[in-house]
Image (cartoon, rainbow, N blue to C red; front, side, top):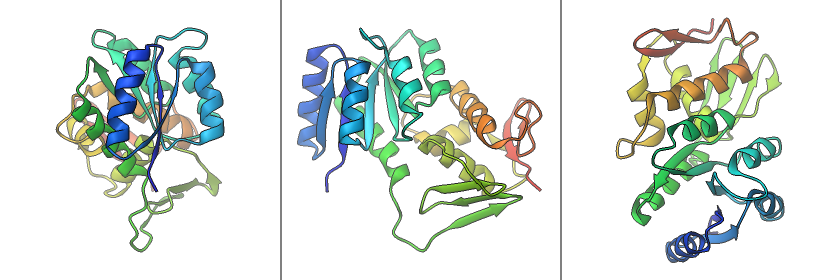
Length: 227
């Protein structure tokens, strides 16, 4: 069954161009012209991935993420203007998984989509479960509990935690982590990883200001220190 992608942009030419290209690539594509309509469409259609513009009338992309993340962890790729780096950081902070800057090529967009969707798909192999301290992470069923409490993570947050938990005590650099979740062919900024870590800490740490699980190694990156 083909994956469903929701394209949200207030510019009709962008919606049409992206829809036609992704349809040719085998995706089922639905569209919305603002955040309000996108929220309604997402509730009805349950898309596998959302391509989301930020600056839109009625409800912008940031407000859409705030509301949508209360209901779903479906991956979101932001469509951002080249000079709006702050928008990328805010979007990641709210729960977006990735971003691509305008103008973008269709082949790059398709590659980004495949990379993000790959994170959400089951491998079909025997369940691989990571257990460190009181955290249990099931990589096949995309399920995590912390002290017997279920925690909902975005695909990027989940993958980042799985990488760190796979080697407790090992220090992972920001570039290595960024390459692991985005791939080495894409642009990225160090703050992408920093923001994902902040989001993770807010969800799994008893006190995010004094992290117990994810430790910052200043000047290098991060390591998982659960005991």
